[in-house]
Amino acid sequence: MRLLLRPLTKGSYFRKGRTPRALSCRLTCALALMCCTLTSLALAGSAQGVLVYDRVHAGHREIVVAKDDGSARHVIAKGIFPVVSPDGRNVAFFAGRRGKRGLWVVRIDGRHARRYVSHTDARNIAATLYDPFRWSPNSRYILGNISTPCAGTLRKVGCGAATLIRVGRGVVARYRKVDIVDGVTFSPDSRKFVLARVTGDGSSQGGGGLLELGGTRRPGNLRLLGSGERPNWGRPGLAFLRADTKSGVDEVDLVTSPGAPPRTLFTQMPGGNRLDDIVQWTVGTGDLLIGLLDAAADIEPALIDPRTAAVQEFPQRLMALSAISRDGSTVLGESLQGEVVRVRADGNVKVLASHADSATWTS
Image (cartoon, rainbow, N blue to C red; front, side):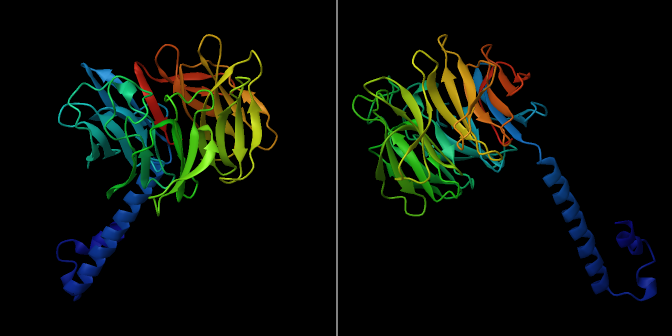
């Protein structure tokens, strides 16, 4: 940098007969070098994962962004249920204040907030009325039950419409006959998605969930795949929970592609912990994180190896289970004391935030 700028000192440049055009070229080179340097520093800084959660402060819930070790935290918005995009650049969340209700997307630094879905219901809408939504792996789409919810019940069929959003554009599809209370997942290439909807009285328990397949390029139609709940799509295939209405035993099934014959990965043992959720596939090892519910209604994280169906249980009990690191060594969740914690397979626990919940990350 010093070599590029040295000829620009007083009297040194034009005394040698150099032209303004040459000066412009040198300035361009200097600026290009500065941009490359800053870009490299930014990429190096982003190598660490991003942690996002919400907490209560001064009577309001606010969205907090931090590094994945809990440091360098800062508030970017007021709202609930934040979900960070896989590329770590944006955060989607719900805002519940009058005049601002709806689904918003904001940059990780708090700039360029945009509302994609407005909630016009003037009543106070409790946080429990919202159902989950999910980002696509390429961070371009959001899918979930994010239209105006009904008041008074969480499991009422016909309560709202499943909505597909293209970030930067807006709503691209609404599925008005679908209420997503049992999860949604995208294919690894983000071209397809599977959502679970409830039937009957709205309770998905007892085999009431139905899986439907759609596409992001032609999002108009859905194709019924069969019964199932809590779908989660990863490189090894599509995993989902299936309940046996006769025996009351839950199992985790895996199909290599939608419509293929299922293979059972995990079966609930009689009298053992119940299956609570299918959370996430790991990127490095290709294992599947599930949550097991014990007799005290606490959640025990467990990893399933899809190749051998072997199960590795984490020793720490949690109140909520959110995510797992790419290498499968660490889970993110909420402790029984209401803290956002990071739990390693060896039992080591680190508190990342107190009086907080709804945590997601990109680690």
